Length: 309
Image 1 (spheres, helix red, strand yellow):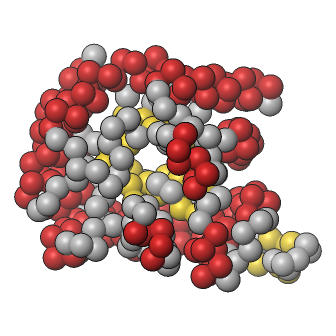
Image 2 (cartoon, rainbow, N blue to C red):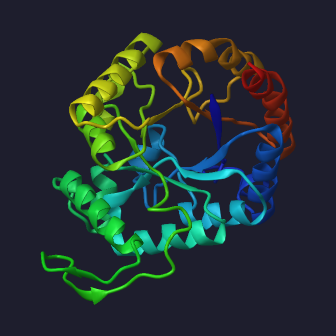
């Protein structure tokens, strides 16, 4: 099992504690020392007040935040969890991802999704209804750009006549691409384009908002992983596909007590048996020193024993 730590880049309520260059660097370095395999950031460029009032969150720009994390770390991977592809021009996204991969020495994992907030699509001036198709197209175009060869595309809206993007990403043929979402379509997109799948714990009550199927138990999760395997087999894929999951009870906006973090350690075998290869751990605290202490404790009590098995 590998572990990703969610950086507190949503904490606009405590900017002096968490939204400074020093804070991002210090939390990233603590995660690296504690044995985490990645740090992760979320993506919401311009969320609606109504959604924020219902539990939504802000976020620093993912690539900017991860560049600060990269500059003050050595081995830890840099994960977007998740980056909404249809919000942006695919070639600008390809350039940003390649730049971060080059400057970090090949540590990027692009966790992507199609998005679900109509209000944010509208605010950014991009269409909501065809977001799935534009996501697929973006992936195809980004992979062409990352190859480092001259690119020509004749199909609008991206008409390209012999353009080349350099430098290429350090990771070849490109950084790993993981997809978020619990739906069959997200699984199919993972199998077709990606290297990993990022389902989320999801109550039945929240399905209408997020527009992705419920996953309310480890048994539910295991069933969706089995669907992933069946879909991969049907497509003729034999290479392994990572599965990254946020443990039940550790929703990003909660402030779990230490016992809930310890419970993650007790459930690692169950998650592994269900097919999970990464656990994405959001950690909350009122102050940075408390967060750093919690990270150290998690490394000692959960990550260390898990990796010695």
